[in-house]
Length: 171
Image (cartoon, rainbow, N blue to C red):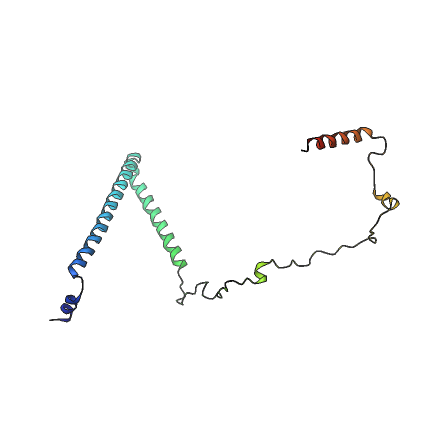
């Protein structure tokens, strides 16, 4: 008895059952694939029939050449883009996560949590006078203009009326 026949004899499941299972699965896959291809062929034939009805017979050769040329150009663009994306250096590819340090779970560094300080590019304030904590009426007089002091009673009445309306509408 050969080694292969002894190996097959020791298998708990007969090979014929495994082969029939694979045949059934692959048969179903290929049958579904054939159905899809048939449906695709029917749709292409339907679209071609519509296009053939719309394109005059003397321009069909030119339309076919344009369609094939467009297909070839798109195919070349796809192939070129895939070649550009491939690493032509022949070296090993290193992913971005390989060189990154492993995160320490449970600890967040303060420099990762808070924004850094802004650079000091704003010039300081140059004061023209000494700041005061208290102002007298004489000190504020050059900077204060009372718009209602010269008999502007209609302005004062209008402002009071508006304030009263607002206060009455407050719940």
